[in-house]
Amino acid sequence: MYSDEHKVYLYKIKANRILVRFTQIIIMVLFLIIWQILADKNIINSFISSSPKEVFKTIIRLHKSNNLYHHIFITVYETLISFLSSTMIGIIVAAILWWNKFLSKVFDPYLTILNSLPKVALGPIIIIWAGAGMKSIIIMALLISTIITIQTVYQAFTEVNINKLKLMKSFSATKRQTFFKLILPSSYSSIISSLKINISMSLVGVIMGEFLVSKSGLGYLIMYGSQVFNLNLVVTGIFILAIVASFMYYGILFIERKFKKNKR
Image (cartoon, rainbow, N blue to C red; front, side):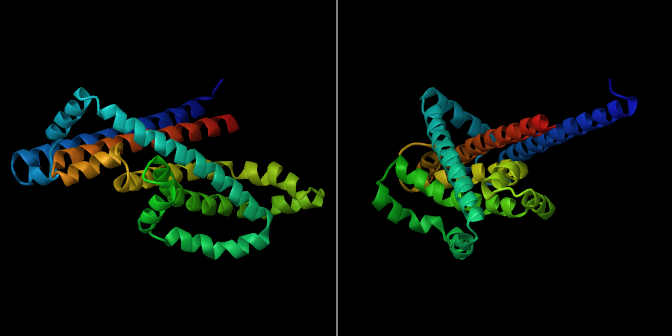
C-alpha cells in the first residue's frame, strides 16, 4: 500500500508527463496551423515552402501509387541495420579500448580526427569500393554513427566510480570480472542513452547515402523531388522523415523506461 504522500507524488509525476505530451502536441498543431495560414495568405511562397494541405495531398498520391510504404521500409530497414551494427561494434571496440590502455591512448586522436571528417566527402570512394547500392549506404551510416558510439560508450566505461574499482581490486578481482561485474552494469544507463544519439546518426548517415546512390528510400524521394523542382515532394519527404525519426526516438525511450523499471 502506498502512503498518501507517495500517491500525491506519483500523481504529480503523471500529471507532469501528461502536461509535457499535451504541450508537445499543441506546439506541433500550432506550427501546422500557422504554416497553412501563412501559405494561404501568400505571406510565404508556397511553391518553395509548400503547405500542410499540399503535403497531405502528396502523401495521399504516394499512398495510391504504392510508393509511400516502399520508400519508408527501405529507409527504416537500412537505418536499423546500421543502428544495430554500429551499436555492437561501438560497444565491442569501447570494451577493447578500456581493456588495453595502450590502445586507447594510441587510437584516441585517430577517433577524434575520423569523427571530424566530413563523411560525404568519402561518398565517392565508398561507392567505388562497395558499389552503388544498399551496401554503400550502410557503410556511410556506419562511418557516421560507429565512432560516436565508441567515444560515448568508452567515456561511460572510464567514468565508473573509482571507489567501486578500488573495492573490486581489494577483493582481487580479475580484469574480466571487473568489466562484467562492475564496468558494464554500471554503464547500462549511459549505453542506453547513447542509443538515442546512435539512432539519429544512423538515420542521418542513411539519408546522406541515399542522396548519393539510392534509387529508393526517403532520401531518394527528397533528392528526386529537388531534381524535378517538385518541392511539395521534397517537403513531404522531410515531413515523413521527421515522423520516422520520432517513432525511432520513442522506441529507444520505451526501451530506456523498461530498463529503468526493471532495474528498480
